[in-house]
Length: 262
Image (cartoon, rainbow, N blue to C red; front, side, top):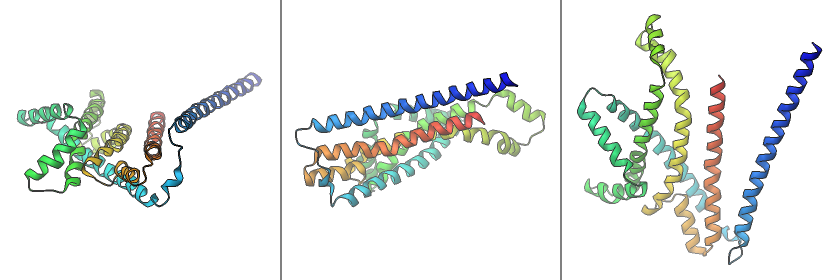
């Protein structure tokens, strides 16, 4: 009992030491990043003066919110279309599978900026529709769709044949298979890649500035044009995007760790 208690105390000690070491490492890393930002700010030709933001807070906040809104819409749209494309790749119809393959290759060969421009300025007007934000947002959804399809493919492929055999052995109906075995596993595995793709969509939404949509990039560009505070605008833009994507990335890592232990 004495040896066991001593062993436990040593384990707790080393765990606390590792925790402190990790915390210290994060503090050092964040301090280095802040120090780099300060260095960059001090090396500008004109002094950084964020007081020039006064009066433009609502404009920038509008862009910040619009960025999140269009990103959420694009995420859910690509989740739905990605699942449809996944079903097409698994279809018994050779035509549907071929359409999905050709579509995927076309998207993989097209930059996101080009997709947005083509959708907003070519495909939309071809259908007598000039709502550029709708078509540009559709371009983002279409661009992410093949990546979502690959997520579905890898997740469903991870369910082994042995599990299907076990479900058949125990007499599970099709509904019971999906309700109790397949869907719970799929949801756990889908969440982290969905969140990663959401981060990609947020960063890609900056390209909507080419259609003058009032997202974060465009509103800060307006602020820069009116005040000539280019250094302040670029620095603020960088920080605001980091404020969205870094917590999302950390949340993704937390979900992966939490669910891997359950």
